[in-house]
Length: 199
Ligand SMILES: [Zn+2]
Image (spheres, rainbow, N blue to C red):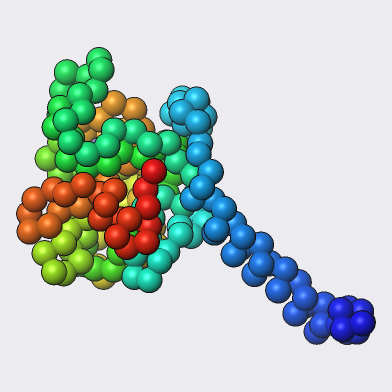
């Protein structure tokens, strides 16, 4: 009866539609981190399809996922050679995740952008200083895709640039790195501790 009454007025319909959209967004948030994108899909995306993923990533408190929705896990942290890649590091300092070339990469937390451009072997890179000696790094982004600059203050979920294959990279992916007092730490437990488990 309430719904019927609501549908009888223009405002009621708007409110009802708004509630439906809100509900859909919440469900999408809850479900998307759980969906695994098979490597085959990421592989075909690497073939040239440019994704424009501008949905907001899952955020928990002041931190969030660097990609919105499902992704393929690449190399984890630690000793992890890349087969067929002589120039890739064997001692992996970060956590590789792929959605496809061009996928939007987001700030994992609030802080100040301290790098926005070419950085060592990481290619086109953004680094964010979160204070407390914690820095996150987003490597291998496409050239000319950066949407932030040095000195800019960002919050979790701010779009940084597009997933790419620059620097010492072997296929489009995001190299996500977390440094504490200048030393790379494993991103999985760090993110899990923030309520944002990587897979
Ligand atoms: Zn990596």
